[in-house]
Amino acid sequence: MTDRRATLIVFEGIDGSGKTTLSNAVAAALRAQGLAVAHVREGGNFASAVTQGIREFGRDAKNVALSPHAELFVYLAREIQLLDEATAPALAANDVVIADRFFYTAELLATAGRGLTPAEVEPVVAAAKRGVEPDLVVLVDVDPHVARARRKVSKVGKYDPRPPSRKGLAGVGLQFRLRDGYLARAAREPERWIVVDNTEAELQTVIDGLIAAVGARRARDAAAARACLPAPIRRRPATTLTDAAAALGAWLDARATREPALAAYLVGGLTGPDWDPRRRALAAVAPLVIASDLRNLQDETSWALRAELAAHAPGPIARSYLSATNPLALTPVDPARVPLAQARVLELLPQARREVAGGLWGRDDAFAWTVRAELTGDDLVRSVGGVPGERAWAIRAAWLAAAGGDAAFAAYPTAHLACGAVGALADEQAWAWRAAARDAAPVSALASLWGVHDERAWKWRRKWLARATKPVLASIVGVDEPRAWALREATLARCPEALDSMRGLDSEAAWALRQAGLDAWPIAAVKSLGPLLPGERGRALLSSQIVRFPDSLALWRLAAQALARGSADADD
Image (cartoon, rainbow, N blue to C red; front, top):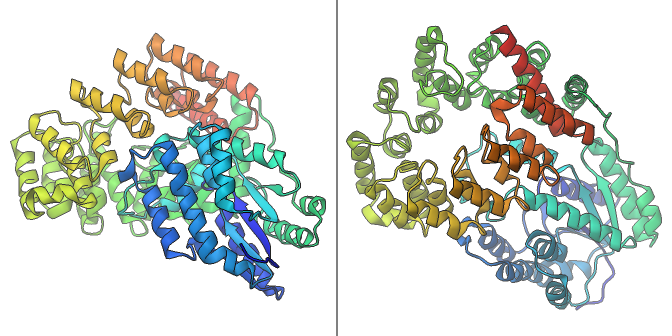
């Protein structure tokens, strides 16, 4: 395409691996050395508006019907446009060009992710690249559980009006398959790929190693580039529940100084003397994250944290107070605290209307209607999701008229809101709304099927199971009937959400599916126990998996939960 003089460095990895942070840091450091550096996705923004537009099309869950073959060409179009418009010109004018993702993303999503064969994918990828190959590919490797936690932390307290990511509809299993695909590709081309672990190492240590690696690669020494990287840090193994909980505590203490939000997220929901001091310490540096995990917690420390964090995080705190007023809550509500919680909800309501409205989902009690009297517009209709009856339908009808009538179903924001407002409802009016909003907000329409079990609902689930596995399975959480088990069995091999959807189920069918899923999804199998975890059978399953995976952070956290809940039950 063009005579090159620049070194092309590509960063690859699963979502949440940290490749964007690292690629930007390396670009800044190389510029500080006096090199001319172009980054074609600086700060996460593509240097091409056309490329950005193609990306938005590919990520938009409205396009849920996009087939794997069509998706491949959409991703290739994105990279071709960026290559032609930004990367190729930059290669002719700079010392170093950095790309956050390259054609490997399209290739591995198609093969490792979607199951297309290399024979049908690799020739079209090669044609799209037109001979341009990177000098160095940096695979930023990370434990998928940590990557997922980092993504969740990055979204805490942020409202994104866009539809969800279409790629995420496949479920968490996609990230595991992609990681395996990336590692296999790196092993296949050691002269071009290097792998840096970004799970445990200090960020600056990783950056320094990558800067040195780029220098070595510019000198055409691939082996030296690999030698510059920090060695992976191995976690201390644990073999019992007590050891695992202690290992988690030590890990959190070490991580709290450099990734406090991540530490706060992972300690969320853990209560008792081992965890309450850590929650309090992290509340000072990551108040929003700690506040977001107080919902349904009734211990003394959680009540104290609500009072302390209300000014810093009014939305999550108002939502957590609201959970303490819910007569349908899974966690028993302390009647003596209900008046205080109700008063706090009303005090925080002006600063937290959206969060409180969402927290009223399915509630038809007197206090819920008291709060609704203070809401208007979108917040009011959001609050009647899952609520049957004429009173709730009058609110929906008034909102629809104000939103422009049937035209409201054609735009994503209002279609999404309409689907939420009829969630769990199976009457004809609810189905009319759901059907009208489906084209603009298909994932929201599927999500609204939770609690709906007529034949139309199961027909939708079967139709969209392959393209929107995660929301379909989310709509059958807790359902114990043959049609639900058929969907779980059909998706178990590729999607741990098949196990997530049976959280707390104690039937023999549930235990059989947990056993069947242990090899592929050991953590999801244990997590699916939910309230069964502290029981004898649950602890036995957890213990067996800790023996298999003694350095698993996710299993350590489940061990801490089991011990904390068991202690609380003993106190009761």
